[in-house]
Image (tube, rainbow, N blue to C red; front, side, top):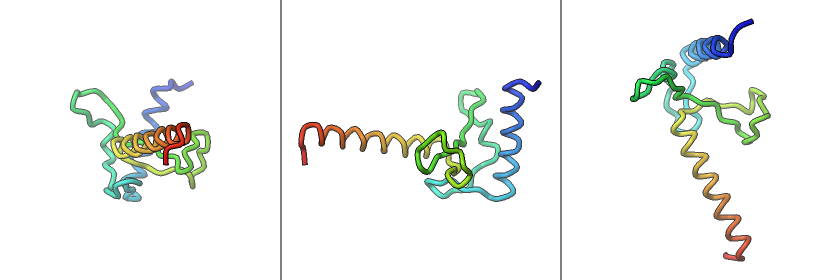
Length: 98
């Protein structure tokens, strides 16, 4: 039985092939993704710089139509903004602020 690490490495290998073959772009900024971004990190640690975004924001919905690739930074920036808006909306409703 293959280890989780081996499965993860195999996944990354196939993902790199897909990114190169289909010239996949970031869902948020539109720039072409770098297939070797998996291994880029200033600190020298191995870290993924590409993430998968769920369009409907439901992490359990892994249908291909619901998934988009994105730069990790773009993805994090998007979700920070979404969470901030949700918190503000909650506060507005709670305290009847218009």
